[in-house]
Image (cartoon, rainbow, N blue to C red; front, side, top):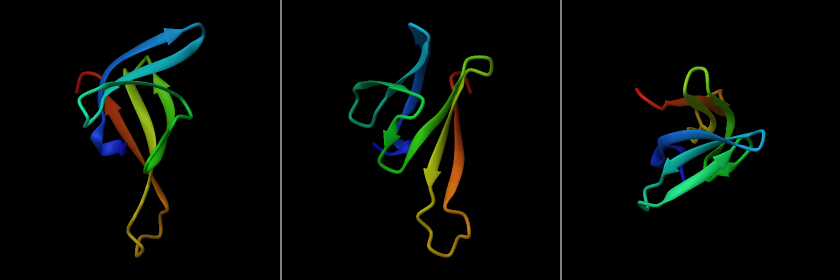
Length: 77
């Protein structure tokens, strides 16, 4: 699944680990944690205080000097 195909639906804790709940482009729910790998990136932070998830997304533009960019999805935009 690509970063852009996910919609943040919720944040929770399992034990002491932060978990984010997303709906994917397939219409199914997906539970992910920090460090989870996606097709074009990974989750680097689940932030309860700001109700957001931060992704590190690979930049596919060969002319870009940056290899990665941060993408933030908020729970209630």
